[in-house]
Length: 88
Image (cartoon, rainbow, N blue to C red; front, side, top):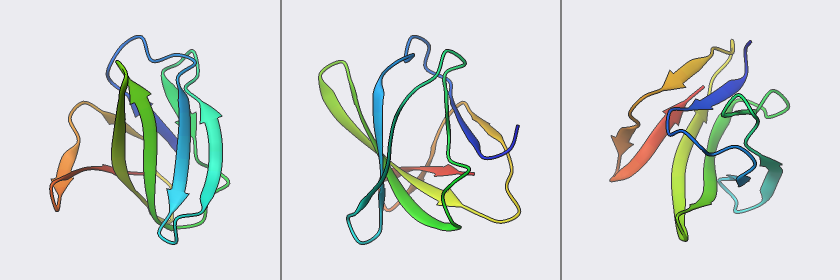
C-alpha cells in the first residue's frame, strides 16, 4: 500500500508514535501496527518529525512525505543534518 512507513526493527507493534509538523504541532498520534508500520496517508506533502520511545529512549526521525506517494521499507535510515531521515 501507499502512504505507509515500515519499520525494520522487529517488535515495535503497539509502540506509540507522534508525527509533528515543522511548526511543532502534533498532526498524528498513532501506534505501530501488527505489520510494523504506520499509515501517513492523511498527511500533506512536507517535512515532519516522527517521535517514539524505544527501550526507554525517545527516538526522533525526520520524515519527508512526497507526492505522488510511495512505500518504502526502511532498513537503514539515511542521515540529514545528523538526524535519521525517512522518505515516504
